[in-house]
Length: 554
Image 1: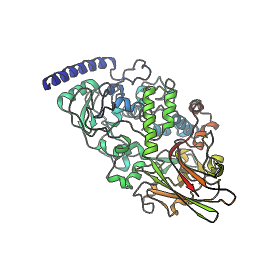
Image 2: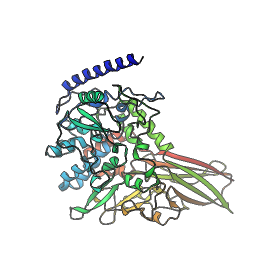
Image 3: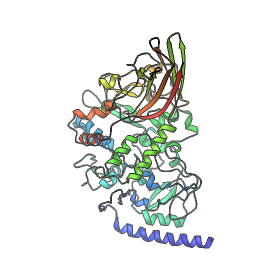
Image 4: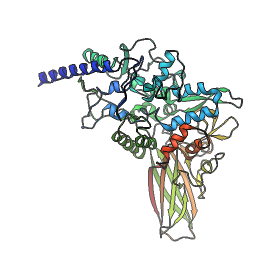
């Protein structure tokens, strides 16, 4: 049996080499690829990077010890990493910033390209060519020679070529990653967590044009931080970029000040571990353990479904079944791994007190990263006949939160609450950005400070001592039960006019694009905004229920 297995591996390896030779003839460096079949991975080899189609044919057909499909190509292609450049909201947001600050367009496009279209960006930078992102001349134009690299988003040969030289330094944040700048295609190293023997390394080099090298840091959070710790300058009232930097997204820094930093990495949660030992390529080799699946599961199920519904327009390289799998994993992540609710009640005379404890399970603040994201509490209190007698945090079909100051007026925002006594008060966990004049804004390049940051804190996070870049802002800082790993909101209402028993139902709701952020392009002459709204019109921006609980009140 052993001899047959070895012979089979040799035959398979020879076949892989033959296939790779054919692939090399079809996709020479810097060649323009032929039209891709719908849902197919892009096949393209550039001077420094290759698209996922050059890797996928060896990293497919993989199963774990339990028989689950853990193929890298199948998991990655429908993730937000794969679709970082296809995301229509991202494209509209870049155009919005350029429209507001046309004199700073080159700098804006560079800042927005370095991570979302890193392969095209870095190729242009190393070739000393002009970096342009937006159509008609930029990477996102189908006529641009680097469009295949750009539209492939955060692809295999982007992350797996990052060098460890400057990781965990301030210089590595905000797209400050380093890559080999000199070695030609065909000889470049590709980094992974496992050692690869010479025979298999030769197969990979012939098939993909990259030589596998084992490094430890690919399994550490600092490699994620290069793009997920994002600091941006703001444009001052004179139209100039500030020297001071605004902490737009800081999940890895938040993680560093949590109790997760010595037990779980970013990969632990966002790349779930496969069951048992598994083969990581279909070319054979030893079974590997642990293997972390390339799902990059997050919370943006809204955009996953938008991409699925518009495959041709957004040039997706995934099929509907791939998006369905990613959406399902995203919902599991939101509903099972994000937060829990604990509800208690008491009554004094005719007054009911309902205490809602929200307990985040994440290793960073929730919601995290891009400031359009928000979560809130929706509480409904009903009498014995089922009539609603008190409600806080309901929403309408546009995705707006009823009675939320910011959804009603772009210049205002809802404060953080410890005690809620009125239906026009709602507890929203969010960031509210202030411009250089201290006014509320959703323009990222006018963002100087946070007027509010009461996002739920991870376990171990001491709001009294953390650095200013990840500080709690607003009333939550003085709230004695807004703490690491928990926030308790107290509701109080008079029941004297109603007949019990009563039922309280509480939901923690989540939106990846809050109402004010979803509406922001409608007043602009923004072609990418028009495109986004054409997709969004068919998909209401409704929240996801993260957690829920009910309680009976005598």
